[in-house]
Length: 167
Image (cartoon, rainbow, N blue to C red; front, side):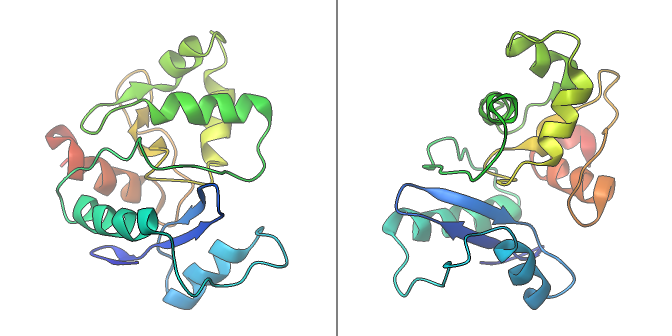
């Protein structure tokens, strides 16, 4: 999906969105990262499902500065431990234009004191933007980490699209 920040890769199954790959240095690199870890039999579909075409439009709008609530997108994430999946579900509940802290997210899943583990789980998030790990910041309001290309600068850009205080 061509966006204002570059090509965003999407992989899906019949059940829902499997992976989102934020832009790499080139479209080819984005595609390679997207497919890394997908099933060996993965291949481009000739006809994406209707919900995927709608998601592409919404992602373009979101990355152009009109925040979109993507919580209704069907998901089928691959991998992840039970803990990681709980963290991803909790992060998905953070609305556009809002942030939460790693510690608050840990408390919300009944694991107070697991803020660092929450950060590691978010670093393994296969669905950035749709599972908005960029909305999770440190307790003092600083950005914390971000594993996508561009690191904290990329996180700040994504937050600035939704939250004026990060612009």
